[in-house]
Length: 171
Image (cartoon, helix red, strand yellow):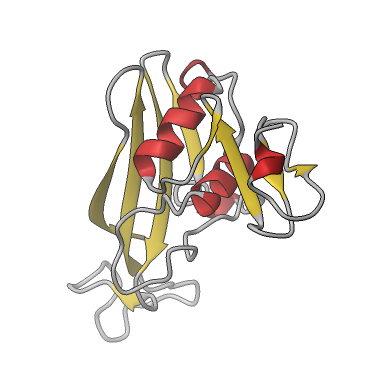
């Protein structure tokens, strides 16, 4: 087996959804892709592996396994000011559905979306209805925003996968 020549200790399959990704003693994770141990890192390598697993057609790994691949291959988006692994991933919180990590596909490409919050929520600038003195009802909730980065890894059927990072405000 190709992976056993590059690893120390017993090899264990990482996940059924991620064939040829193994856990070992050293290095801790080994990926075999296209008949060789992958030593390169980054979005290009991760995207090619995910594309070969069928992510563009919706038959590939789900978001948790995709996040594993991004971590193993250090394929995180180029974000500054936050830790690479500090993306929002709260799939059980309906209020965060628009910000939680996700995979989308349309048969021509796949998109992995990660959102990173930058700092704490802030009051939305500008007057809001009911903000005037004495005008707030007991159920008044001020509008809050969070500055964030929306990072989308587009994996096309052909060509190099690439991250697009866009600053956004999330209410």
